[in-house]
Length: 244
Image 1 (cartoon, rainbow, N blue to C red):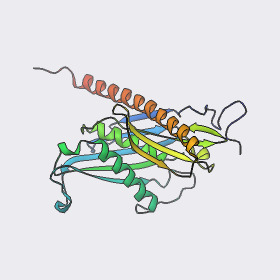
Image 2: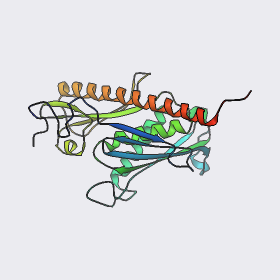
Image 3: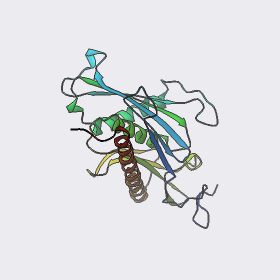
Image 4: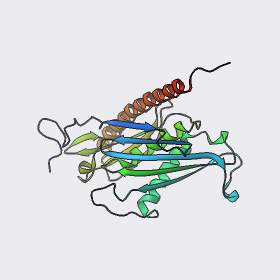
């Protein structure tokens, strides 16, 4: 299959270095302390945050910091195959760990000792890039909950097909068998939070793919920051002027 046309267009009409359309929504679950949906193209993820609150199992409590618990799930209707996924399958466990590790590097846990933050992430529709979309949705839900963080975290992936580095692959491209590099960063701190590769890749190719993924992260971060600011401004208008 040809993934890049002679005109330089991908299967969905995008250029190699072009992101899919981004979309997000805040406060989608009334009973959660923070919740958000995040969409990258046809991939849609829901995240909900509860806490910080008292640790349910005292044996897990850490006096100097909060603990983060994360549960990832994929809705049975999220793919065209309509496959049922259990909560304890290997991929779910792996992604739960990845999301938790990213959040632990982002949240100022030391400000909330002996407390617990529960994060639930569910893929509602999958079309490639679910790992990065989950991280972004979780970040927005954490921000909506008002939990203090070191920096806004953003994630994006890039791959390599038809001798070309391509940004933010969809499912068809992701199934092409080429290498896939997922990256999450703190853009203001210039730190890498996640770097994960699914296939072997030559070092010279890796540098280009990683650089493209990092550019994608920065673009996603700009979008997320803009939407968060707009959300806060809407809340301020709804609450009205503050009386002294």
